Structures are given as C-alpha cells and as structure tokens.
Image (cartoon, rainbow, N blue to C red; front, side, top):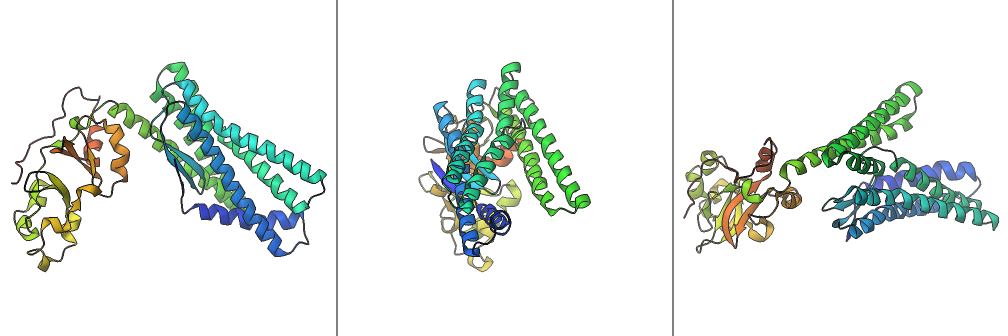
Length: 376
C-alpha cells in the first residue's frame, strides 16, 4: 500500500510550526531560546502528521479486513484520505471502517495525555510537556470533529451506515449524509466569514476554508454515488464507441490531415494500427498540433503517437466502474478497448458522461451512433 504526501502538507507543517513557535510555546513557557521553540514546534508538527497517518492506516487496515481494496493513502493540508478501490458491501462493514478512525485518534489522544501527565510528574521540561499535551488535545479534537454526522467526515460514514441499515438503500443513505455535510460546511463558512467581518478575526478564515472543503467533498461524494448507481454492472462494451476510425502508423501527418479527419469525424484521437492490424498507439490532436507545419510532410504518425504502453486499455466485458479511476488518471482521458488484442472500440470520459444521462442502466448494447470504416 502506497503512502503519498500532497504538496499542501508543507502548508499545514508550516502553519503548525509557526503557531506553536511564535504563539503557544513562548506564551505558556517564556524565557527559552528561540531555537528551542522552533525545533520543538517543527518536531511536534511532524508527530502530528504521524498521528494523521495512523488515523488513515486504521481505516485502511479495517477496510482490507472487510474485503475492501485499498489503493493507498494520501496526506494533504486538511488531513488524510485512504483511497478505497471499492466500497463496503454491508452497513456493518461501513460502520466498522468509519468508526476505527476517530477511535484511533481518541486512543492516541488518551495515550498522549497519559504521557504528558507522567512527564509532568517526573518534572520534565515544561516545554516538552506542553508539546505532548498539545498533541493530545489536537488528536482528541480531531476525533470529535471527525465524528460529526456529516459526509465526508467519518461521522458522515457512520450516519450513512445507519441510514443504509434503516432504509436498505445505499444511494438514499449517501444523499442524506451528503446533505448533512453540506449543511455543516455552510454553517462553518458563514460563521467563519462572520468572525472575519464582524469580529475582525482573521482566524475565521480557517473554519471557512474547512467548510468550503466539506461542501465540495460532500457534493462530489453524492455525485460519485449517483454515478455508481447508473453505471453499476454496466460493461465497457455498452458505453464505448465501437469500431473507431483508425490510422496506419506509416502515414504522414500531412497526408492524414489532408483528409480532414478531425473536422470530418469530430474525433480528437484515433487508434494507430501496425501493418498486421494490431494496435500500437493513439494519435491525438494535441500531438499533431505540436508538430510544426513544415515538418508534417516528413513526420509519420508513429513518430508522434502515444505508444500503446502509455494508453489505458480495457476489455469489452470489464465493468465501467472499474475502468473509471484509470481513465480519470490517464493524460489521454480515453481508453482503447481490446478483445484478445483486437481493436473493438474506444471509450472517453465524454462517453461515460453521456451514459450518466440514461434514465436507467441499459440492458442491451449501447448504440454508439453511425460507424465509420476503418482506415487500411
């Protein structure tokens, strides 16, 4: 399991370090050299990140034990996120996965509180005791905040598990938890800006920022749930454009463009075929545009195509939902569909967007419209 750090982690490290070194520590324990304040503050910020990682690792471990595949963990400015490849299959599994995060933070806070008390009893440096006590308090605060019944917080997942258990409808439960998340987010945004405007307190920007994140994440979560509801069980073959127009790898860009393919077919990419008919790459309009006009007569399609190894491929019977994460992460934003190595279609995010407009998931092969002959 991969653990990643988003660049915004540096922001939270700097904010915590500055807040402790210039505020909390010198206020509570004046008279120490500045290097002690800054060194201990930086160390405290790093330990705080470790506690966030422990929170997310707990989610990941319990998720795996409940049959949910975990792609990895990413830490960023507002905390962390375990990237789950699939979802819990029962409300009980959802509850276990969600509950373990706040419980881990609460346990960490309790242990750190005990350590702070022990250090105080042993007459350790008051500055060190202050740092450990701060870590204890922030972990307990993290546990309480995450337990609020609002998506995408862990408490929102607990609420979804409860609603799912009561109604038997996962999508309806997700909508309820997301509505609670948006309500909490707007409350934090309004109160945060009110503190700035009327209380002249710039610290109100922080809850406003978190509130904005909650609104965005809760909205995205319900959209993802609706996407799963429409595309659940739908294979790639029902959404793809079948028998796409192709181009031979030996053709020159000038010769290819002379036929006006991009305007005539309204496509922005074409699969590239070798002499034996196998797919070897993908020619995109951006690659063509990046080639100087004077060089196109001597530049072949093979010279500028994206090689097959850099393109997402899929099988016709692969579920669209399994393909979607790979498609979104791909620079080309499209997948070539192969059936035992033979080109049978191409799938873009636009195809999936159109599929989301279907009233219900289809039960027959999706009609992708007129088919164009393949180029030799």
